[in-house]
Image (tube, rainbow, N blue to C red; front, side, top):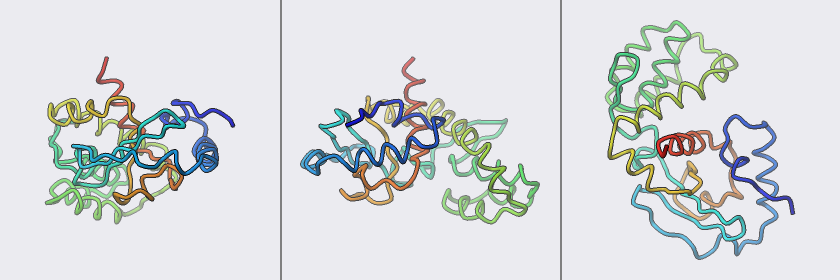
Length: 199
């Protein structure tokens, strides 16, 4: 069987076929590779150990986890203080496409969930153009969140060398890498930020 490397799993800028190739390889692994190694993680996440790959996976969900973009952890960026990564991310989107009314509304949104909902209704939105910059925008926001908040930074560093995975639900099925249906962009960004903070 072809060996899975950490680079394949972690690099968000790698070859576009990596995610599907890795998923196909993981699908070939025996079920017992993922069994009986679940632990509750202090970050409102779940840790799984995959003995076949020799890696552990920290799987988190939404605003309950400090790792999520909805988690309220104010940080300064571009001469403003943002309540959450979602506020910055969707405000940037609105400004990029000239929807300044939405940008102001997003900036003052009462929660990250509201900011995200407003961001999905930005006028003149162009998905192709946004995809060209969205990863960079999110990476900047995530980086500043963990640089400026010592508690958040300590939590991220506590994941050690685990592969960080954003999951839809806290259960074995969704946290099992064989069920991944996306590129796990945020998980990869968090891993890159964690590696940078260790330097």
